[in-house]
Length: 161
Image (cartoon, rainbow, N blue to C red; front, side, top):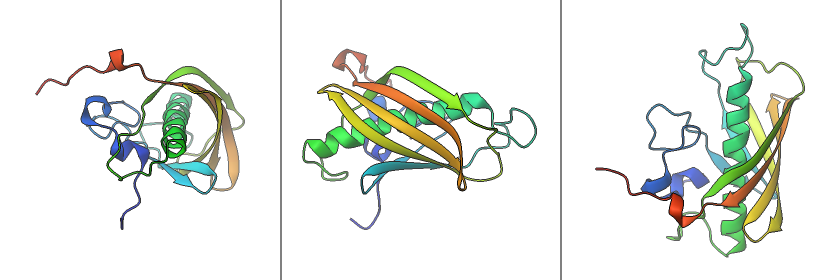
């Protein structure tokens, strides 16, 4: 494959609607999480509307970014553990958030792309913990932890067409 895929690019249409990372949500943020060596990476340029105070990002956007990067990281890790690669025709697992912990270390500037680095730890076959660091250039601004669980099949509802 010539194009690098994000995990969110491979979610089936029935569950690609998340406000944070769903590719099919026209109003959403469209966060995208990629696998790199032994961690994941999500890059996002905050919109001017995401202002807390002039020049700085609203904390809710940062929490959403950590949330989606965390569940995307867990999905990547489990998909890889099961022997798959994105784009190989297999359907990646979808995770939901069991817990979200966000610690704001310093104000996050709004004018630079944000990079989220995720490190994944399996704590149960269906439950994964992800440690995440949000950087504005080289400055760590936010840290987070997501405990993600494999989404139950009962959550999937066919989309109306």
